[in-house]
Image: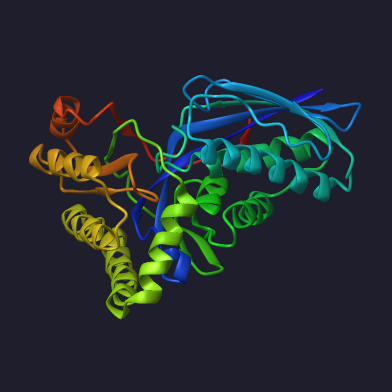
Length: 328
């Protein structure tokens, strides 16, 4: 028997980084998916194949207590984190099914670049938990999957994760997350355009950098709170379907994230290219440091502008994914 589940990536309309400190955030699921296929084994070994998770892909097989690592041409911390996400996801499935010795063959296919700010790890974790538990004969609700996926990210990111990415990936659509309070919210069909600079980042390192800045300077702590205030303002604009105000607040949010040190020259250049292409607003999405920006644009000017930007490796329109984790 084999089970395949998929889960969507996400962009942040507002609130990344500040959500770690209990401020609200509004991530939105997008129709870029990670698909995880799981086959139960007769032994306790795990074999992971991830052809699309990195530039070259990798396969690694290991048993209990093994410290084998794949040899691939991407930053070591990202691969270590990727393996950590997979192993912790399988551990959650074992726990849910009360099968502590279960082994698995795992195949990962993803349309979401690794470490680019589109929620690749959350999508893999959510899809992985769903597929592995089903393969062991247990069917979890999306809320249960989200809770277990959060535990995985909390563990792998040394306690610095929020519930935002995993809840959004499990539930789909637009969600609001503030501390432990997670819920779906209504949103219009937002005209997202994503630009990707081809870079990847270490989320844990960037989150830790903001924490250090916040601990050292009161005004950095105030900046985090200002992001929370901006999100609350943005929720009202979202409820009204006021795209102009949403765009203006996205621009403001990018400035605050830049002040917290998580932007990059490439991201700033992509944001400005999007704005000059007619975007209603544009900002980095995710942890920052490289990766993706998200813009609002009802026409095709932003896609054209991004395609001409030297920093842009890929640009695409991203539809809101109304469905979260699902069996394929």
